[in-house]
Length: 329
Image (cartoon, rainbow, N blue to C red; front, side, top):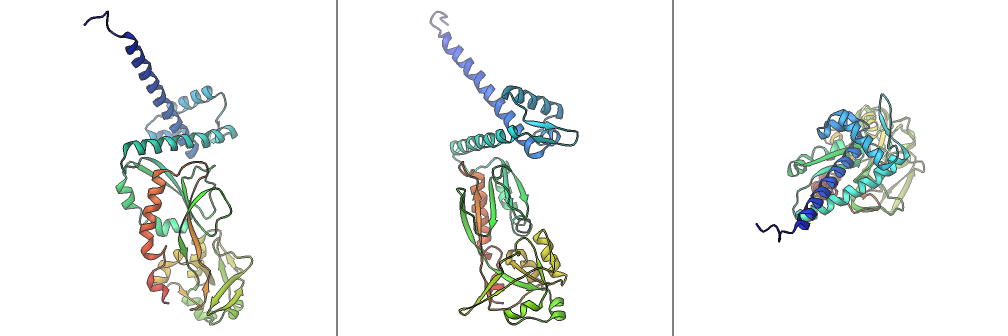
């Protein structure tokens, strides 16, 4: 080799680039670790997920805080909580990681999905309709992890790091990106034992004589409107017993505690096996809209779009939980 003609500047450039690439990979690894600590509120849990010891997690987070120049977490013996600065940093970091994931996905030009997907949804819908169907999706994407954040309250997509939420009801004016998945019919149901004891109403004006069960999805302070053949009837369904979760309201109705107003996605199995029966046949309530909602300020993640497409196709045959057999009842 002629050393006089060898371009040493090219070697130096390659060395610099390799060093830069290693530093970038290290920084991205630390940022991913930071997001898992933030979401699990635990150094130990985050380390277990990523195969890192708790002391190493603590050291890397401390180094990140030193580099940022601010405390990102408040440590205690029981939990690790984000500071206000840490919460703001988390929002920005997750947007960066999501954009990088989108770029990697486009570059691969494949349908492979990776990373961790956070999905917000109601407890009933998650348990009854999503979990029984999601196995095929997970098998098709073995490198993807899915966090199902189930709650009967609406998650804040930004502060809770939700990639996509499935929401029932009209959406408030918002700049968030959404996709209408369908409309789920609502109905009045009761247990056969309750109807045998209290009588079966045949007209809406008889509802005032009955006890009601209410949950988050059936609380209607202004009352409900029933329609049939051009006629309208408004009634209030004030609950004699109320539940803070929809599953509790459905269980109370099954126990014979009163009439329940609910979407069929929340009581489909109980109607199929006869534990609940529809009442006031022919009278219809306004259906509830079902949307997939994506966080504001960034493009929807490929994994989020893929999951929503999968669920839409899975749920279409039963129209989001409404079996064709029930429509004729």
